[in-house]
Image 1 (cartoon, helix red, strand yellow):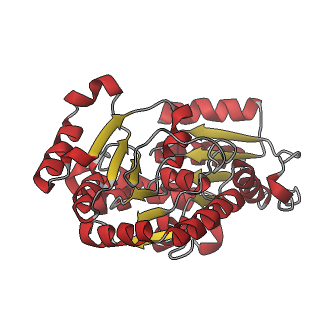
Image 2 (cartoon, rainbow, N blue to C red):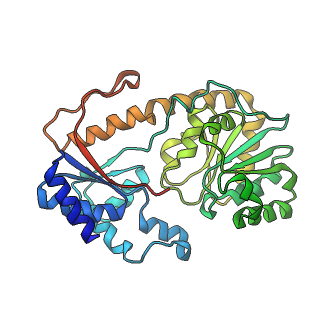
Image 3 (cartoon, rainbow, N blue to C red):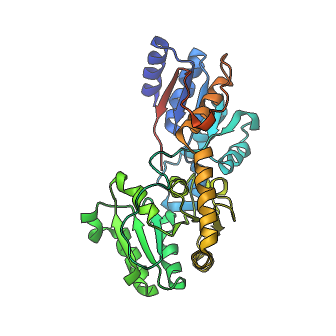
Length: 336
């Protein structure tokens, strides 16, 4: 990381940007040092906080132990931290970061691709539930499988994980299939594995309810993708879901790791077509207004301009493309 910081400092000195925006904690180590050396404002987005990961995952957290010490120091050394949710902002303030130095800018989705308009994937007559996302334990897919016993006749599509030809040998899918057999729902659960990105909107639109109930979730992209497609969501009341899903307006929030509560929420939605339609319309509007890439770009640029001489751009009507630009260098990558 010291070598990374030296190389970054040299690169920034040769082609000086207005701001540096680091993504993930290790990139922040390099960016805060380089920014301090050159007097360039540094913005930091963590995408996931080590303290929160350790709290929820315990020994399953594979982060190096020094992350717990370094990450707060990166936050305190940054000129502004760009959090992706209100829950993350609260955690940062608890570390001692002043509230005015934390801005909340959510992650975005392609609302041109993820839209209610268009075809849905082929399906039968059963009500269809969809679980979309990475196939890791914290995503709570076993909770969805167990809840299916309380939702008679519904089928569950699990999308994510290995490539389709590798599904039969995947250990996590084997664990979930065992749970489905023990619960008596194995004939109603299908594991599709990883699907082509172009197929995802059609799969979402073919579903009656999208179910995302992780017990730890920094943001929750797949939840917003479902909202953008106009599909009602039942999500766990954690992390970014507390911001994205308006309980009783765009979907329903339930406690994590609660198959009974989840089954009850899904049953209520499936039994009330008018409620599903209302949620669908409200979810689509919310996704377009708050989580389109044009709106995320506008909000991010507003953060940049708060520490530079440029005037803040007005909110783009109908999410028009921002035409003025602030030169920025982005460092690092996301963790999902």
